[in-house]
Length: 534
Image 1: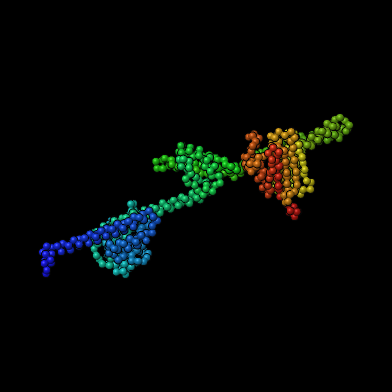
Image 2: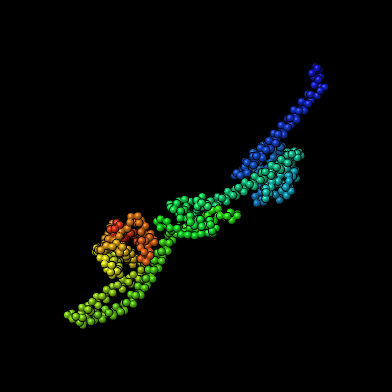
């Protein structure tokens, strides 16, 4: 032994170095262990708000956990509405076995006590899971319960081939790990429920065929469904909604209004305040229903009801007039036969008979009009329908000093349809022409009625030299309620109803107009084939 070795031995320097390096290695190992524990906890924590795959997370955790704790088997029992589902996560491979917690009393005890329990495998009930563990030579199981904030989540088991005692720091870390995993699973379940509820709400929101808009305090739309986004006049709709939206914010009560947009589109708007937990309004849901077609139907029903009432009244008047007319005509004819033609009274009696015949024709037309609820289709003459209408309106037109010009093609075939309804169209066209002439200030007022065939259609053409229609108004004249007349003169329903009747007959109504010069309306009705007419 040399001098230096003797000095080291006597002073203990070498021994101290050994102790120092041993302690240092032990400290480094502990730091590595703590670091690995933190890494495992972080792997679980970072998945708290994600749509997680529990088996994938557990496999990743197990791979790192094996570097800290010795175990040979691990599986996970997740409770779904108190029913367990078994996930095998270590060793590699996947199996799902039947699990009966009621027969696994130790499992139930671990959940009840909320603390880890160590059991021997050979003491477990005879079930497939016990057979699997024994086939792997697993002798002991550590049962670690998992509890969330409000409910039990399941049990995490760790199996060992030898009945080694679990160290206190191992049990402490597994408890911390299980608590964190339970919290993660609970949050993940809540996250999925929120996502599911959100998706259900969005699907419902999109599925509604009517428009829905959500407004903020500034009147800005921050959410809308597909129907609203596809609406062509959305900007105008939002603008006309602002007043009710602000009223709803102010009053904190639901509101309602009707909105009229271009092309006579009618929308019903319902506004509902959205409140937070403090009952403060932070938004308004606006629900819009397009009621244009419904209103058109209501209008047609109303119009039909009015026509029905007028028809009944006309029928009553006609029947009341028939009796005195019969006496007037009968007596005038008797007196005419007894009176010489050179007698001065003959001319007066003849005038009485002519006026009586005219009254009888008017009564006949009234009776025809009163039967317009009978919408049976039959073959009729369009020229005869025009003459029936003129019997009713000729006096009105003459009183307004409007001259009538008829150009009716004589050899027109009969067409099939409801003559009273077609007469109603002609009445509407003639009354509109009369009103246009009244407004025009023309000194020579004229209406021309022409009939002819064109391709496969019978055409009734009504022309006036009245005020005409502006170009921008032409697309809207057939819309319900569209009118330029005073409230006392018209409702804007005549052309709308007339177009509906024409379409029911397979026809249409067209118009040409020049402001200041007049308008021409074309009623086109389909002709029937010769073999169909028989």
